[in-house]
Structure formats: C-alpha cells, structure tokens
Image: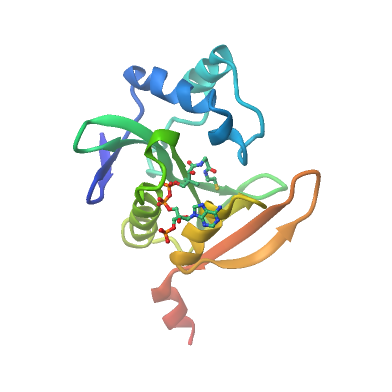
Length: 178
Ligand SMILES: CC(C)(COP(=O)(O)OP(=O)(O)OC[C@H]1O[C@@H](n2cnc3c(N)ncnc32)[C@H](O)[C@@H]1OP(=O)(O)O)[C@@H](O)C(=O)NCCC(=O)NCCS
C-alpha cells in the first residue's frame, strides 16, 4: 500500500524484496553514526527487518519504505511513528518524525522532501497536534532539516550520548489557541 507521495518519492509498506537494501543501510557505519553508533551485522539487520518496528499500524503511524519514483529504487525509510512517553504509553495526538536515507542518495534533498511531506501528512491526514523528533548531538544535517521545517529545540538530554528534542506544533492548533 502506498501511503503518501511527494515530488520524487513514494512511501509504501516494506516488502520482503526490500531486505537487501534495508540491511545495506544498517551495515553502513556512516548511516549508523548518529543512530545507534555501530553498524549492525547482516544477521542482526535481517532480524530487525523481520521482527523490528517496520510494521505499520492501521492508524498509518509507522516507518515506510521510501522509494525513488524515477528508478523504483529503495532509498531509505521515513515516517511518523507513535510518540512514546519515557514512562511508557503513547502520547495521543502526537507522533515522532523519522527519516533515514541510504548514503549514496545523501545531499539531494530527499530527506528534506520526505520530512516535509510527512509533516503535511501529520497535519492534514492524521490531524496531529504536535510532531516531535529526537536527534543525536552532532547530527548537523538532521538538525538543519528540522530547523528548515520550523521545528523548535525544546530540550537537550545529556548522557553518554546527548540528544536534542525538537517539536513542531500544528499551525492550525496554534491559531486556535490565540
Ligand atoms: C540525515 C540524513 C537523513 C540527511 O539526508 P539527505 O537526503 O542527505 O538530506 P537533505 O539533502 O534533504 O538535506 C540535508 C541538509 O543538511 C545540510 N547539511 C549536511 N550536513 C550538514 C552538517 N554537518 N551540518 C549542518 N547542515 C548539514 C545540507 O547542506 C542540506 O541543507 P540544504 O537543504 O539547506 O541544502 C541522512 O544523512 C541519513 O539518513 N543519515 C543517517 C540516519 C539519520 O541520521 N537519520 C536521522 C535520525 S534523526
């Protein structure tokens, strides 16, 4: 099922044929630098593909296979997944934005295009009130993409690895609050 399209991309459910492209990204140290740290082995990556968080729920919250329309190539995974509280449980009306692009496709504006499309999807199709995103400190490209979309930095979590928490409020809800 195709859930969404943007100018150059379409977003659909993952399929078993995506396994090699998915594993290649998980095995790439550059892709993993700010999202987990070390590359995964192929076995680990494959297990994650089969058992991991790629299933999309009926409310369309989840991470979608991201396909370049011009070549039909799998170029990453993007989407909005449920916003989980640290204490457990899901925050109603909110979602977390996620975007991963394979290294050979970096620098072409694809993550920006995907992120922008999912923000619009979050407001118009899912009627979300807020979208959040967590980015490891140092991941300058991701910070830049979120800032371009108008996200605000709301917290920095210090730890062995430090993370920025970003938030964007639905502009319609913002107007209604005034
Ligand atoms: C982060 C990532 C999604 C970016 O994908 P991409 O398709 O190359 O991104 P885009 O081309 O849309 O945009 C990148 C922007 O950041 C800028 N940028 C790149 N490196 C940067 C850096 N170190 N610091 C600041 N800005 C940077 C680019 O110039 C570009 O800006 P522009 O749109 O104003 O020209 C990709 O590198 C990736 O998948 N990384 C691994 C997974 C990951 O970190 N995901 C995000 C988890 S929060």
